[in-house]
Length: 361
Ligand code: TXA
Ligand code: MG
Picture 1 (cartoon, rainbow, N blue to C red):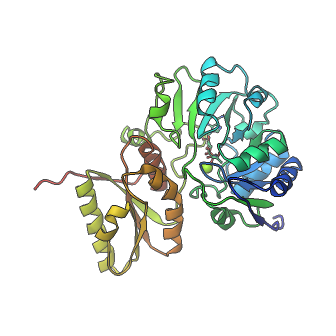
Picture 2: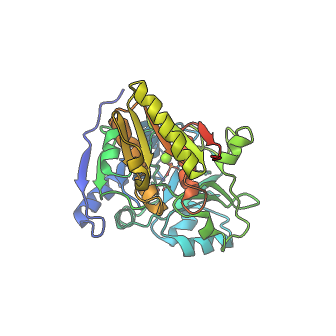
Picture 3: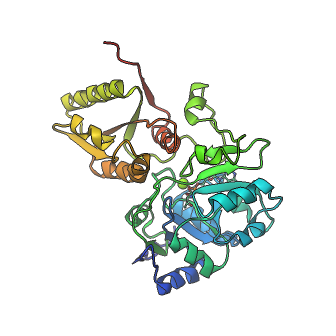
């Protein structure tokens, strides 16, 4: 085992990042070291994408299997042809329209991209983050940066520098602390190398935003896959167990009033058993869960899924730390960010969805 690194955390203004802090971070990246930084989605753990030894450190730090490919980040469209080849016209159109932003494109890779970045695949995932810190960092480092979410493998993605420190203290040289990330769920991963453009992971850019530009785009929700008997390996790295809090999570799905009643019944059972229980719900429901041993983590107003997405991973981590034995939550529909929320929650429950039948009265 190698010795732990001293991990430095440096506060950086997310709007006007200090040049000295960004330069120090860029120097580390160029020297083959790891730097964690905020993006508009979640914190990333960056390394020079053209340096296989630096990329290997990402896998070690995260405890991530080599079969799970990384996203390469760029700051300028002029870098795209360095990373990808045979780029279809639609990729340029989508890049023009949605970059910088929470959209990752899977394209055929250039030979300069090391095999460990792409997990041996002939493709590479690329995105341009919409955040001043990575923008300036990538520009100063002036090379493509591979960056997965900066969590230990199979943990909820980090949306604050503290989450990164909790998972990776001693495993990363520098964490740029630019405050909480604005979107809170990862980018939408769109595969443009298949006959039909396919969403591999719903994320910060909703399906509805892509549809006008890409009418043929398809997505097979994990939920449907489970109901079809479970597609164990729909895409590389899309393992079902992912984003899991260390505490068991139960995901309720169904009509709102029936879901609320079922969750309340489960809470009452936990109270009778003297079991501390956590509930992760919209603030409108917070008052519906009270009493001894119940910890409520508010996801903000259920009318604004952007608030829910922003808080989701942080509240999973909060409930873990609160020491509850079980976490209850529910799905948030399938429109807009609802699809990404559903995907993350289903992964966190390892497929344990509780279908609540509609109440008849
Ligand atoms: O928002 C985000 O995308 C964040 C920030 C840091 O940019 N990054 C992120 O990276 O979520 P990561 O590694 O946690 O998730 C990237 C996923 C992988 O799990 C993998 O499934 C998919 O993107 N991916 C990467 N390269 C791929 C490829 N060549 N083909 C198919 N899927 C790929
Ligand atoms: Mg991740």
